[in-house]
Length: 244
Image (tube, rainbow, N blue to C red):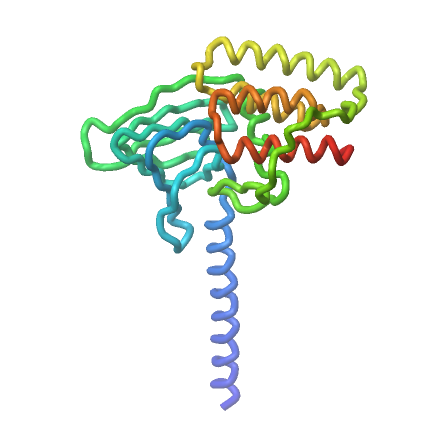
């Protein structure tokens, strides 16, 4: 009887250990790192990840992409995906299916030849900066889908709050970032806001919200009516008014 009880106890322990292992495995699957960002989108596209149970969701501009995300582009659709780790910028045209890796995507499917992207390589210092762009400052949220701020009207008045004081080191870093920004603009297409995304992240870090407001306006001129950019503008102005 005691032997049987011991076997039952051992079995329960095994079940508990197995359940813990499975829970950890599921957690590891769903807690995947962000590897890139969609900087441009035209047409319809969906994404999914085998580590999640839910079905495909709609791709949005500025959404973060995780390793293992599967992106499907409809015919005539196109998207640009920038990888943070190595500055690889891929532009894909549909119909196409691709799987996001750590530093590049792989085309999927049976169609031959498989579609391939146009590739540009940006400075890594710029791509890593873009990873921190404050498109979703109010919530860390979950990667894989864009996290936007709560909707709010954009003030139409000029920012009057003084810029945060800067140390000599901070001034030098912003000057360097401005030069990188200008260099990125030289090779960017007219509707590419990647250079602005880079510079905005630097200005936000150093709380230079007046200058940030000007750069976001430049982004909105390229993409008028963009909801995420409008919210970014509202956030920057709210930070300036609050004196953050």
